[in-house]
Length: 78
Image (cartoon, rainbow, N blue to C red; front, side):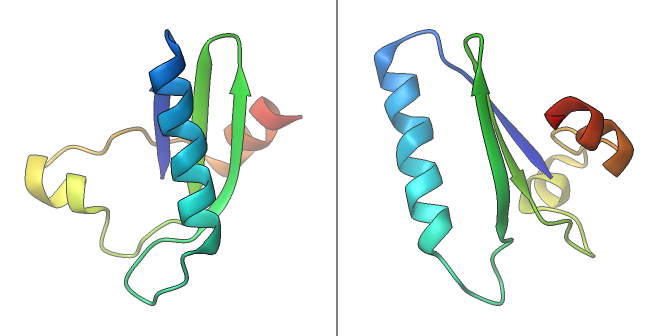
């Protein structure tokens, strides 16, 4: 799962940084693990492990936030 942040001001940048710090330390069987992050050109991404039953957002809205293949992710980060 990928979560996207638009860093158009200092508050959104701080929100992203806080979420990275929080999820980097969080270990719980019911919470997706943070695999990586990227911040570039006014946009930031958090990459989480894939969940077998989808995310809470998928369940509530019926739509995934953003989905990519591993090869697309690899190409993006390399």
